[in-house]
Image (cartoon, rainbow, N blue to C red; front, top):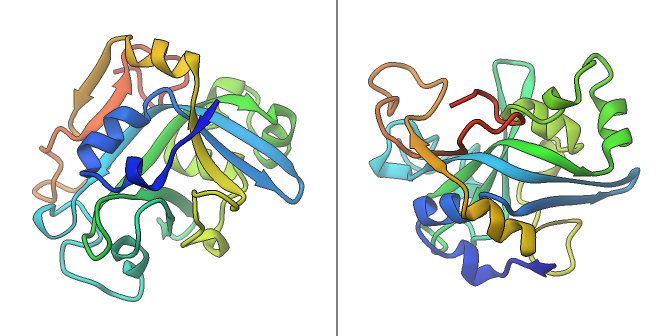
Length: 200
């Protein structure tokens, strides 16, 4: 297993998003480790992307997106859920990849405890809010580093390569308002994967 380095993240979000498919996303939390294999992600590109939180410029909420690559950008949505993104591109450039869904790979029992209302393991991390809850991510983790020494990281292994060789569909993103980037095809998902948020 090889941890991803800063140079992996310091690229355009669209490139990073596609290459995150099949990677392991790991949280070595205080209550135990959990990991998912990413099967669905979305790219967001700041000032040129009306679907991005950074479209209108830097704010206290989006400051993390302008920071160095290889960090988590965590935000609150719908007044009840946290969502996690990985910051990409060069420092000062607002780009990130939303982690939409993953296949549980480690710490499944802990994920079940965190997602106690869920009876089907397929739904443990099938969606951005579900993924963050299963992985124990909250606002406190905004800005957390994915680089060496932190409790979060991404890695690739032999299975990552097999995922990248599968059919990966590039589609429009989910949940955006009409005219707010909903037509931009920057969502990447393993075609037909049972742990994706949608079967497409």
